[in-house]
Image 1 (cartoon, one colour):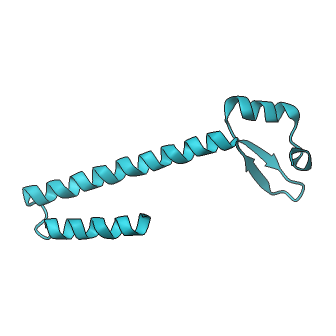
Image 2 (cartoon, helix red, strand yellow):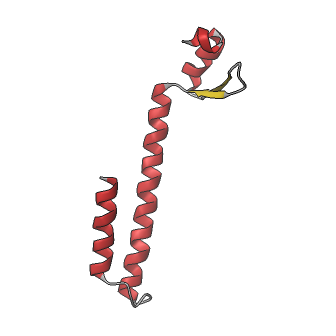
Image 3 (cartoon, helix red, strand yellow):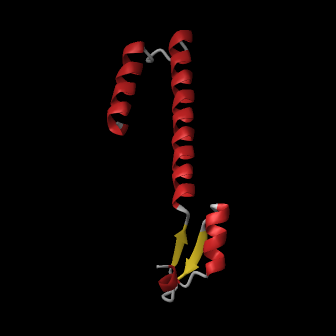
Length: 91
C-alpha cells in the first residue's frame, strides 16, 4: 500500500519509530493522514480519558449547584435522569 501512496521507506521508518502521523499528498490534490495503528489507539484512549474527565467536572459542578441551591431548578432527580439519558446515548 505504501508504494501506491508514494510513501518512502524512510517515512515509514519514522512513522513507526515516532508514532507521529504523516501527510501524504495524492495526485488529485487530496491529502491523506497516515498514522501508526498503536499511536492511533493511544490517541483515542487519551481522548476518551479527556472526555471522561470533562464529564466528571461537569457532574461535580452540577451537583454543587444542587447542594448549594445555586440553581433552583437543579434537583437530584433531574441530575440523575440527565445522567441516565447521557449514559444510554454513549453506552
